[in-house]
Image 1 (cartoon, helix red, strand yellow):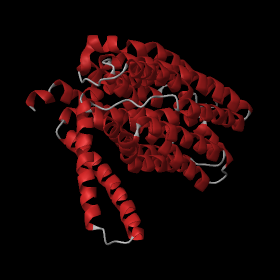
Image 2: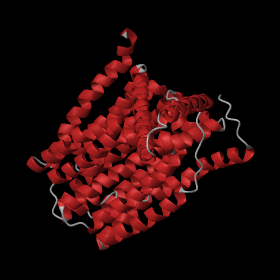
Image 3: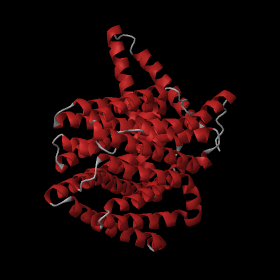
Image 4: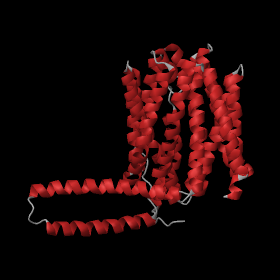
Length: 440
């Protein structure tokens, strides 16, 4: 365990980051639009194909900006990244509410993506590095389980309140979400930036000394340059340093992935499952609405799922201790694939979303712990952001295809195609987990 040489007050502040993050997770996750936005945009004239394109725009933005925003968090601070992310979130909801065209909605989705980018790597990195600094990193899976429980409870509030308000007034649900978002911006200022590992700090000091030597030499050589030219050169040098730091951050992170096949597999595995279940979650809204269910009923189904997820989440570390990593990597995809068939074929199809969501929640907590354990602190935000970038790539591929299938076939047919895909990939994963590793 690294020695961070922290004062008592610093340790206290970092421990408070962990508890503060619980409440932050709750208020950030109370989004009354989560379970209704697809229905809302459909009511504004958007087709399933257009909804798929909007989500694709979101994920193209996320794909292109995820790693740079993660690097920003590593270079300039997780706290700053989190605050900027919350500001973007508020702006995006306001645009979604007041826009009346596809272009307006597209701009909203771009800004929404940036808000997710700013939080995705930075939030987890802020908590994990705070725990590492005070010697509590071994508790991360337990803390992650608690966070997932709080997230699910916030979902319950979001789905019930959002679904109810949507039956009265869509704008009211959006307005309440904006007010809550403004509060999260203020609350985010209360976090303390965690320190990086001493080795990284030492490396940074050496880099600073080198930069100082270089700058001194440059000053000597530029005595004959005019004052105006000196100022311009200084700005250009600072910009070059920033671009170089970003480039170095990305290339070193890619080297880590190249040298860790297990880490690469965990990222690909978990992010595909997340994209699969996310696609089911969103299109199920329109599927149920098409079958005559009200927004409140749809919200209630998701709320029940959230309650069960909140009960399960704190027990993930106990479940993992029994079935181990291989049990999670094999069993959870099977549950998701079989349940997708239930959504496609069963009369009460929505009931099968419950096991899908529970399996996804278990994977989310467990995989987060597995991945964090093999990521160096100084690259954590960037690599976690790269994981989200992989998620975006899968969503760009899967989500619009399901929307097009839903328009030209039916959503029932689209879910059948998803079930076939899920079953095929689950079979491949099971064979690899049970036998493939033995011959690597």
